[in-house]
Every structure is written in structure tokens, then in C-alpha cells.
Length: 257
Image 1 (cartoon, rainbow, N blue to C red):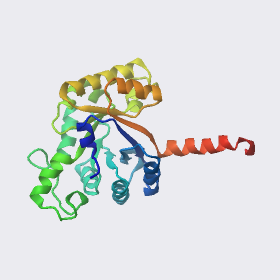
Image 2 (image 1 turned 120 degrees about the vertical axis):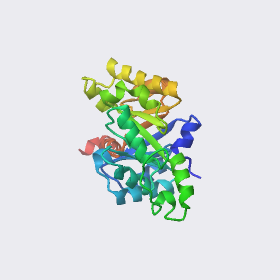
Image 3 (image 1 turned 30 degrees about the horizontal axis):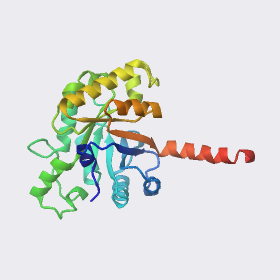
Image 4 (image 1 turned 90 degrees about the vertical axis):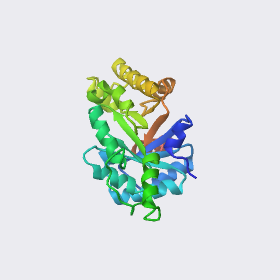
């Protein structure tokens, strides 16, 4: 069995992931798998606009390579959450959450009754394409689907304690880019305001027995996050890997350029 993000969090293991947005192709997934060391990835539907069909293929690629996956979605409607989960992704992450009430609404889209109001359908991958009995599917999905809430707006930061307390939230994810923008220090990821915000997230998670993750801007940022209890690090994306890889090739053959 492939360990899920929820299972890894339960064992307090550090989860290493990457992100996919602009080149949502299974070969990219296989490249990361061959490099090794990653537990999975998240699909950036917020910025990349990944289609349902692409999510299906990427989710298959994840499972084929022993990885878990989740989809970052803009909290615009319950259907986006349903598409992600029914496509076979292990979970979802709500971007641009504005408040605890907003976070609760997002969580309700991920859970069947009595916890939530997710539309019931057994034809997706999460119900094994109708092979799983309906009643079992409802119980399994409510228990196993991974749910993350991004903390990147002033509203979510101000209500981070209440968000961390929500039943069904597995991880709070600090988006340092948008967080720096919200705090008036755009692009300054090492600014004291950013670390004060991260400390607030870490404290809320510790209080309510939850975990938190981030996308570190540097090795130093990653270490400071680990020192504060971070358990999920997004270590780059396909575009950063391509740019650095191309630069490394150019540097290797500098005499030819």
C-alpha cells in the first residue's frame, strides 16, 4: 500500500512534495520518482488551470510511482473539490481562504453527511469506479480524504486558531508569497512579519494537534520551518526544476555559449 499523506502525518514523518502546474505530464512525475526522496506532489489548479482529465492522469501516475497527491483549488464551488477527489487525488487544498467560516465551508465540500454536504457519486476513482459499496465509500472517504487549508490572507491569519480547530482539517499550509503580499512586504520572505505569521500558524497547529506545511524560499527558510514543527515541505516545482536544470547544462558547457 502507498502511504497516504494522512498516514505520514499521523506518524509525524516529514513529508517532501513537489508541485505541478504548467507542465501537467506523467513523465514529469516519473522523473521526480526516479530522483527519489519525494512522497508525492500537489497539482496547482489555482494557477495552472489543470483540467479534470489531466488530474486523472496525474493521479494515476502518482499511484504508479508509489506517491500520493492532492489538488490545490480556488474555493469557488463544491464541484471543483468533487472533481479532484473523484479523479483519484488523495485530497484537496483550499487556496485564498478568507476566514474560519470560509474554511468550514470548504471542509464541508470534502465530506459526506453527517459531517459535510459533498455530492454523493460512486462512479469516480475514490469509490473504485462503483466497485466500492456506497455506505463503505461514505465512511472511507470521510476518514481518508486529505484536507489542507492555506493560510495566506490576513483574514485566515487573524482566525488561524479557529481554522486549526476545525474538525476535518489535516494541515495548514503557509503560502509565503501571498502571505508577504498580505502583510505589506511582498517578496520579502525573511521579513519579521512573515515569521511572526508562521509562528502564529505553528502555535495554532500545536494547540489543536494539527500539522502545517509550507513552500520554503531557500534552504535556510526550510530549516527555520522545520525548527518550528513544519511537517510538509514543498521543495520546488517543475518550472523551477527545468530552469535550474537548463542553467546547469549551460554552465557545464559554458565554453560553447
